[in-house]
Length: 362
Image (cartoon, rainbow, N blue to C red; front, side, top):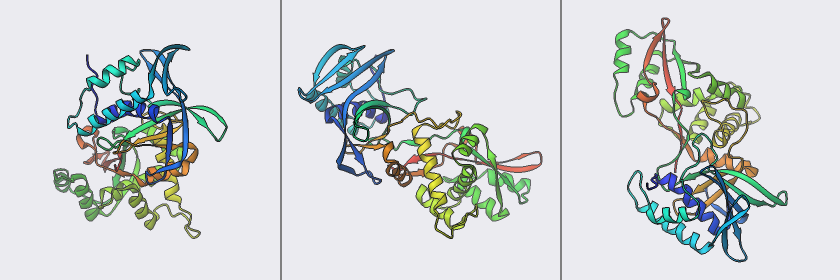
């Protein structure tokens, strides 16, 4: 049975081949540009396949990749062959217009190298384990990285679900007829249109809580004001033309809904949102209790649309945070699948749910 995957999933195999053939990871700046003079030498890549652990070690002197299992050498392959297969795979990914597809030539090479699957466990933010030489501590470190690709559709940072719904109480009065009229709006931007009518008619939406308590407590663990900050960001997104995270936070700062003391120019909102984005990127899931432990303890690898791979190492946290902040946006997910965007009554009060989904811009 052939291996099939989408562009993002095939990008994980491309990243494996590319970093082995490059022999280095290159650090990126906050705008996704490569910093050529800062590199991390790669010693080996670790993969789990069919309940076995395989090591892909780099022998730079002989230009070979050595594949082993339980300290037993299985085969040696030229680094040039990995480079050729990486380039071939890149071209195949870029030209295909299929949602999912197979690449038999690459599958044969994968199988020959004890590589049988495309994607890591989806419950974990870590896509690849790499042993790099770490100049900060002058020794090798094994680090997990999450892989994001620009070769296909932009990846999500925070996936939508009922777990990411925020509940608001409508404090103004609306008749049953008005409620039905608002709920019947079915335009392309129906949630935004509904919210703007609600604001115009009542002027008052009050954040109550998130639909799922685990997500709310995860937010509070990161920062006690995050539930309210993101309730304001969501309202701004659904009632304005802004969608980029950096723009939404700038708008919130102007209003300062949490009444922070800004007399000394403390950038409270930006700082707290960056912390949230980083925790989501490296491990936090809305449906699971967050204990602050990063799955992707190395950081991010970005496969750029030209095939270049950029590394955001967690040691350089400010660059990583700025990258996330500058390159993410909010978007509207499926209202029917995630049950949000309609007015509803409960114990005589009127409410609406808004959903938080965050996607990379490119």
